[in-house]
Each structure stands twice: as C-alpha cells, then as structure tokens.
Length: 128
Image 1 (tube, rainbow, N blue to C red):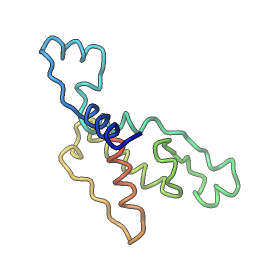
Image 2 (tube, helix red, strand yellow):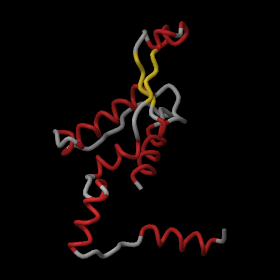
Image 3 (cartoon, helix red, strand yellow):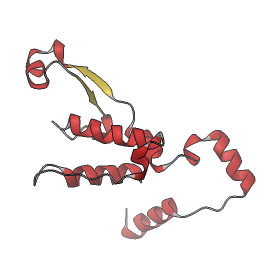
C-alpha cells in the first residue's frame, strides 16, 4: 500500500457526510450508535467482559484473593491492570448513564511507567 492510497483511505473514512433529516432519522432507526454519546460509543467499542473466577485456580486465588476478575478483550495486551481497566470502564458506564461522571474529566494518575499513556492511546484508538 502506497502512502497516497493510505492517505486517501484515511481521508475517506474521516470525511463528514451530509444527510437530510429524513435520512438521519432512518439511520437512527437502524443503528443505535448514530445518536449515541461518546461514552456509549466507547463502551460499545470496549465490549463485554470475560469473567474469570480466580477461586478455581490456586495460583490466581493467591494473587487476586478469590475475586471474580473482569477481562475485556479490547485490553488483552494489558496484563495485571484488570482492576484499573475495570475502574475506567465503570467511569464510562456511569457517564453513559448520564450520571455525575458525564461532567467530569478522566484523569489518569500513577507512577512513571505505570501504563497511563498506553491506556490513553488504547482508549483513543477505540473511540476512533
């Protein structure tokens, strides 16, 4: 793929489209994501979690204290950050419901090398 075809493909995917009101309403009937908020779209992109019961595995039960861990397929590359990712997903779930988090900014705080930038890049990739 040449650089020009890559640029053309990227331009076509991000180009704005003009619709009449009737076309937009028809689109909304067929596709819920047409009128979804940013938090709702991000939750759709993240997907449903896979539940992992750590009480059945002796090694995992010592690490996670017999908790049920939610692992999201979109964040499969992030190992050991299940609780942080679950808190982020919870933040977006509450924002999608229109609760107080809708008006707040997601602020990632932690030590150097903790994966904040990687999480932010992954969230950016998912929202696009």
